[in-house]
Image (cartoon, rainbow, N blue to C red; front, side, top):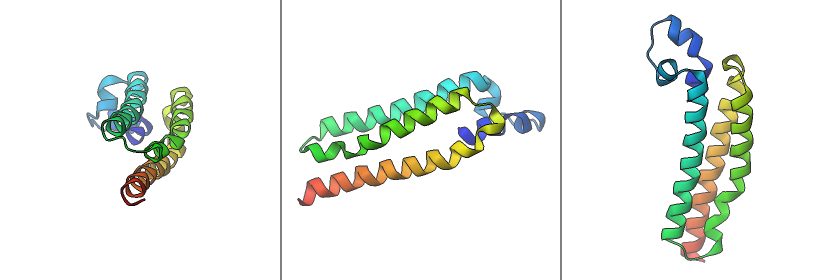
Length: 109
């Protein structure tokens, strides 16, 4: 979604009908925020459904990073989105690793 927000002008000029082009940058930012919130919410729901140990909440360490990024993305113009693409990828990787580690740790310890 960040990639599409960054490229909105070029995509619109070349006739690409990405979701961001169709809904516009402001709504795409709201959509991006919703994606992040839903991801965290669904991980929390999964953890509650399979709760065994406080270690399972280890992934929550990354939540402030996501919300700092969302705050910055909402303020940013499309041309400045590139720097957030790498940040979001690394934060997502960290969240997934911590989630996986917490499951493995909970299973074997």
